[in-house]
Image 1 (tube, one colour):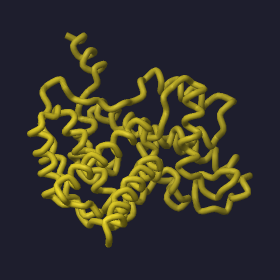
Image 2 (tube, rainbow, N blue to C red):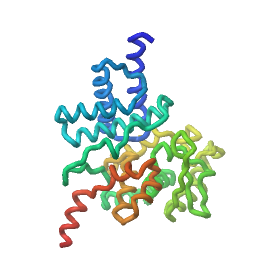
Image 3 (cartoon, helix red, strand yellow):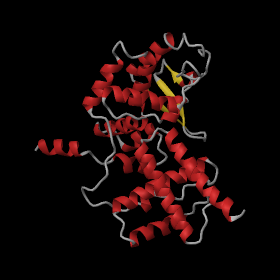
Image 4 (cartoon, rainbow, N blue to C red):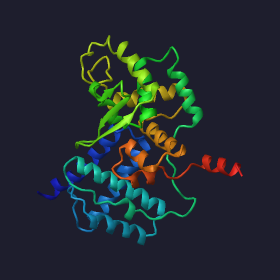
Length: 301
């Protein structure tokens, strides 16, 4: 393999990683941040005479973190880059370049000073109420209502949402079975009564009259036997613009996990419902309360 073809491998991997993030419904700024971090890592690696071809090693990660520390990068910045590396590591596993996680968030992330935690973005209670009022209005279709309540009350990734099959739903047991990633991992998510009602309404009405009604997938479009991630993103973006709300799939997931923790649900249970491979992933994202929560706590004194 010559130098030009090797260079093309790294560029292709970054482009593919970017595409995967888009398909998973991340916000554009988050995607830009993740891919920027990975380009920076690859540039650093190549400055050391190592051409990146998809083989991420534990040594690469620890050496890069040491470089960042020695060059006085802010702790928040270092931890953000470590998070990006962990996501890239998982992408490389999914694409069969690697077989294991070499980035260990528990070991690799630096401790933050008290009060400097980065908070995930979530819907406020008022925004959730506004959204629920809209999807129960006459202007909302049963498909839109189903998508919103599934995202809001199950914490599904957008890739999991569009891959739900009719056989994955047990209406009697009020349960949804999700296949996680490209492997054989599966998780079960109990369904609220509101979700069951939305499923039944969609199945008995809008979906039944769709020309692709024989499809094995739950959510259809007028043009395809399965709704894809781009269609979900466009639908949410359009809805968000009409309501004046920022709206993307992962915002629902963040809200789902954060609300469970606010209601004192055990971290291990939240991790299982979210389909996180490690409880540490859940902790890193959601263990910190928001500024609003902190203010309300102090106001109780």
